[in-house]
Amino acid sequence: MKKSFAERIKNMGPAAIITSAFIGPGTITSCTVAGIGFGYALLWALVFSGIALIILMEMSARTTLATGMNLVDSSVAVAPENQAWKWLVRIVFFLTVLVACFAFQAGNEIGAARGLADICGLPIPAAAIIIGVLTLATTWIGSYKTLETIMQLFVSLMGVLFLITALVIRPDWGAVLKGLIPTLPEGSYVNAMALIGTTLIGMNLIVHSISCQEKYHSTEELGDAKFDIVVNILIGVIISVSILITGATVLYQSNVSVSSPLVFTQALEPVLGSWARIVGDIGLTAAGLSSAVAVSYTIRSIFSRLFNWEGGSMSMPAKILGSVVIVFGTAFAMFSKTPAQIIVAAQAISGFALPFIAIVLLVVANNKKLMGERRNKLFSNIVGVLAVVVTLYLGLRNMFNVISGLFH
Image (cartoon, rainbow, N blue to C red; front, side, top):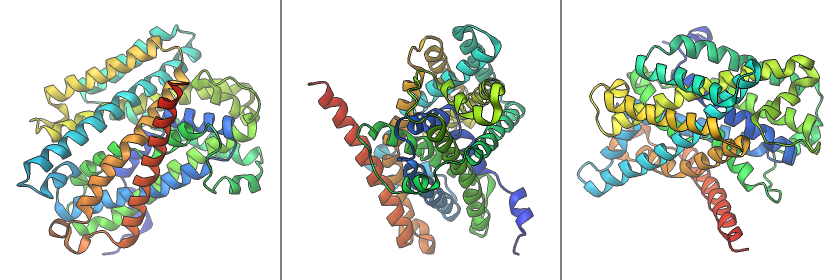
């Protein structure tokens, strides 16, 4: 039975979690930094990563509905008797998720703490401890839905404000369109990687498959999953693009020092005036806290599947692991001297981790035994491979630049 638009909206879920997770301090800071440093030149990275994310998430949902398994289990099921493959999959997932979660948590708590400290007049270490305690509470008590809903409300408000600001300030739309053509200005590799990494997050593909496994129960619901993915990811991309356009239009070549994630509040001043900093502080705190909660849930959810912990994400080993990640993020938030740089680096690390998870997803999606008629079509494979190639190239190029810089 064909569902109405209203019914599909009401039935949305898994992809909304992903969007609320990636619209955090990392997205706000990376988009603002890219706009300030390179104008509209890196807009293509956001659009590319948005399209690739939609295709990869559809692939993730389709493999889950076709096999009845999340990505962790279906990856192993490709060659269930091959112990080497089983351990390779688990090691790849373990390392990429672990590194990405620790990096993201540092960025999320840094952003949330800076916003809270600024609006309340608190010392940054005190604000960081408050953020850490709130995030720990959601990990151990588990009742984070109300907090997450309130935070998402503020994040949505920030998205609307940036979209309005981007339209009101009247950017050079010709230059905006030119920014959709892939170019890499000198010194932009880390920023391009950060923009891709803030949207196209490898571990979110695993979380999405787990969420789809819990929500959907047959391939007949694939249409609902696709609708959910397209609507929510487009919203996230529009927000990200609006932030970059706003930062580029208002602050490009303004010699603004990008030493704090709060620099983005200056881009809101054309619309909000003196209220820009207050609203920005609230938005940054909300975005950081909601994303910090999401990262804790992500690592607990994925690792409980990797190691078959009884009780899933609320098992004792999962809670301890989630707490370690939160404490790590809190420590960074308390003592970091270069918060904006750390946040951008976290997004770059995420982009570098993506290819490995995407490759495993492509292997599953093309397995005839598991997928049958639901196997990947040519277009999905082309976009999937392109996402792997682009992120690997940018990651390796950035690594080369860092290593060569050590010898000069």
